[in-house]
Length: 151
Image 1: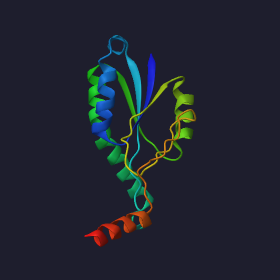
Image 2: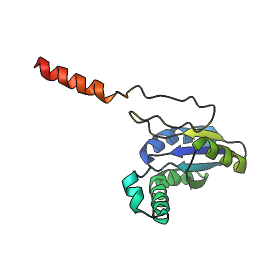
Image 3: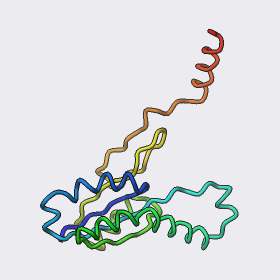
Image 4: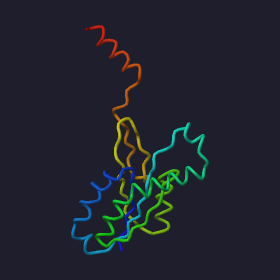
């Protein structure tokens, strides 16, 4: 049985990533085990200050349930086995831990790319991509001042 570890932070983006993989004839013939690792967004420091650890854990679990339900339904429709977990801590270490539990598995990073955000890699082999869209605040302010001065 083939095994897949999939990192998800946005349900629609993950569905767009997984759907083409399911239409391949090889995956339809063989049942696979999919481990979905949901990556909920971090709570900001103001929210985290007022919520207890139990409330934060409950929120992360509810977020995971809401944002993986579509992928779980799709995968189960094709007859695959699905496990869902919530990612926490370093993703490289989490990948090693999951691979230690299930054996050899393919790792798929289905997280939605965002401007000005550099994601942590999920494996040591994954190249670290740096966002080219990040601009220092001073550059933006100077550009706006130049535009105002020219008008």
